[in-house]
Image (cartoon, rainbow over all chains, first blue to last red; front, side, top):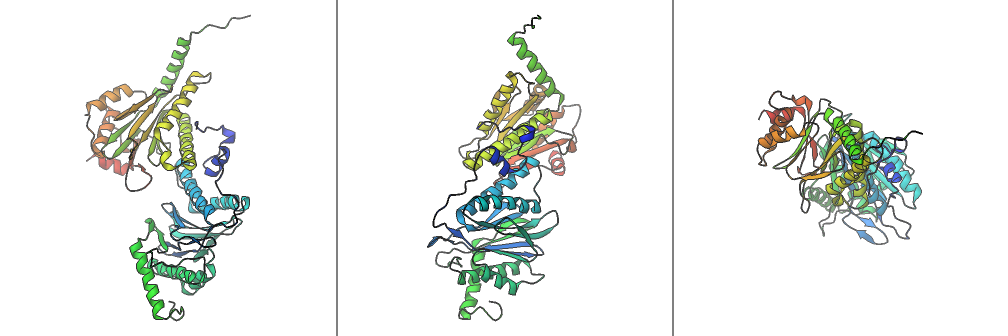
Length: 264
Length: 226
């Protein structure tokens, strides 16, 4: 490819999406199929130190298509992006958004603000969701270094962006995960408490929603747990997520599968 | 009817080269050199925000001297080239040599075509990995590429600086020592350049995918006084 140079009036600026349009590179979102693979439940919680995200690992078509899918990605050091909806479109969505933020940073020699990122994605959702038969719904959570706090942004299918001051949930397991969060969330939760509550919400969704996978003790596959704080994006190692889910599982076994009582 | 003056092709190229060289010589110089952990880029640049050195891709850095708007255009085009190539194929397929060739092609064409020749010299540095070597590609205003294995000097006074840098020693050493040598070569024996007037960046594997990092004035001062 030759050097992509543009004259002043047609310069795509720092937007990677505009650049792809100018270079006639299509967003490689797939065409219609009868049986697309779906990715599901992700939760994000805010606390004083930052945000916590927990996501299940299952992708489902008519049968389970994948048990070890990764639905949370590091968009940049202080931003996590998670997806639900059609898996193919979602993975592409993550790739494009990650690249877009990096492209902006290199072009401008400055990082895009968290709010700038969340707004940029609105347009991208419109491109993907309104231009193809597939729907992808992202969840953006990160640590806003300009304002020194964690922030969570949810979207609707048409690209509407809504900032949440407590928690955000996406995917088919939403009713179950959200119920758990609504009962358990309160002001002043610590990061560790948020991890525990987020894990419980995903456990609930995995327990009740056929498209959401819970912890898989047989294969040793556990939901992904990520924190984004002033120290940046950190994914909890598997050794730790295993302990978190084993604890919930033991409690649930002791209560003979009942979720009530002291929020188990 | 007036006859146009005949100018020989040799004279034409000579004039254009002289024009470009004069433009480049007006700015301050920069050095790119390999140290034991990566590639160091050092420029004398009193401006804290108009950068001469920048990131192109995960393992590729860029530096330019001469007319700011011209090498800035090359820089942004390079970022666009790298990001769109990486998007279309894969991150591994973005290669400094290909980028250097694309720059050379553009500079070469601009030099021989009718318009104003570009008053810039640029370099593309790559931090090696597996099958890719650590390399510094230097592309001159008329599109000549040289591939340097140890260091490159860009800018007006490049011959003097090059001689001074060679005299500092030819071993590959630590970041601090390499920076001290580069700064001494840039400044010469008669003056010293304050850290605030230096723009320093490096490509080094520190565990992240992206290897480009700028060094703060404080860190530069610390390295220079070590």
